[in-house]
Length: 162
Image (cartoon, rainbow, N blue to C red; front, side):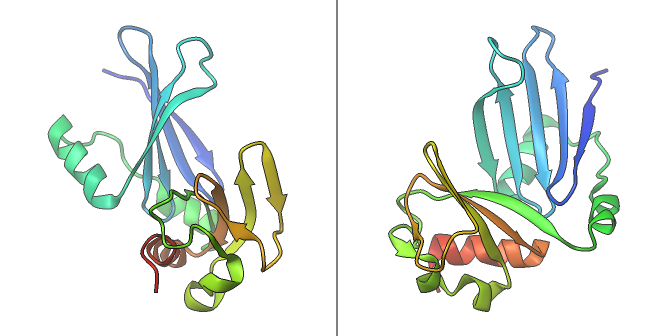
């Protein structure tokens, strides 16, 4: 039986990691919004990820089905109570996202979803507490804060547009 290491990520969700039989470290972050990220750690540095694959709810359900179902019991209800409904997520903007090339103001994100962008990370540059006129570039990461439901709506808005 595989032993999972569980790490609570307050305001984010929970991460489960395990070692494969051949010594590779693999993990899954389950965000409070329901989004999941599959982590494959570097064989050179077990604390660094060599691959992060974001999975939408239907994709993670399909993968779970292919792998034969889940034996991990979710602890997200406890985590949501610990932070009173607050969730934090990291959204990777690609060039196909509607928001790429627009400013925070142009998205009307806060008004439409109740979610705030608290940082924009582009390459080596991090802009904490960005101004409303901050551009949202492809290949940047947005750190957002809101309710899990609001973050789900924010992902849809930023990706697909109004």
